[in-house]
Amino acid sequence: MLRKQNVAVFVSGGGTNLQALIDAENIGKMPHCNITLVISNKPDVFALERAKKHNIKSVVVERKQYSSLQDFDTALIDVLEENNIDIIVLAGFLTILGEDFTNKYANRIINIHPSLIPSFCGSGYYGLKVHRAALDYGVKVTGATVHFVNEIPDGGKIIMQKAVNIEENDTPETLQKRVMEEAEWIILPQSVEKVCAERSNNEIENN
Ligand code: GAR
Image (cartoon, rainbow, N blue to C red; front, side):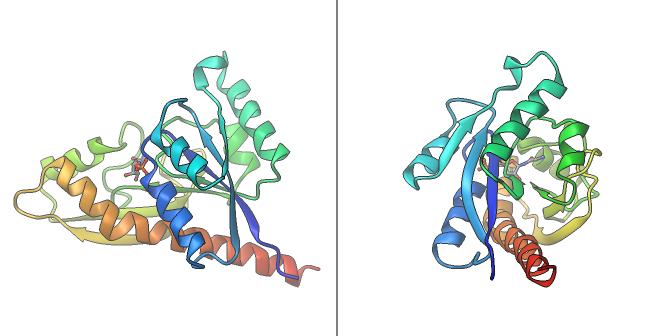
């Protein structure tokens, strides 16, 4: 029998990508996924309001509460195990995860990055900084990438990408908005569904 994959979404901010995932699930576009948990590394972010509104359990795990990255990783793993999580989605989660975490969940952590990797990615490239870098360089096309997470920042296998044109008068803010609307909110739910469907189908074959 088909088992839906339990998905945890990690957030640090406004949570528009979390909203895109919730909306996709609610209209039946993610039939192999069950978003059951939201984890935030900050207590007062709007993403937590979105989780509450949709009756999704949320937990705050702050990096500063732990003296080492290993202890932070362990705290996150404990919460994920308590909640039987299969797949983790980093949707604007802006804290580094340690190797204990990325190794344990190899091929089960999905990240969205607001550029076409390998451009404008890696350590220090997040949020508006990515779009500012694209505009400063003068590229005419940017976009978004969904990829698996490994120990190299933005270095894991690519799942999906979508290109977005840069317009003459773009600012980092207008570009961020267009990349979200035309790429991120589309390919993130599609990618998560793809990964969950593959896992669910493998479970059937192996039973
Ligand atoms: C998104 O644009 C996401 O791609 C980016 O942060 C934003 C979060 O927005 N992530 C990174 O830059 C990761 N390197 P949201 O909270 O509204 O989803």
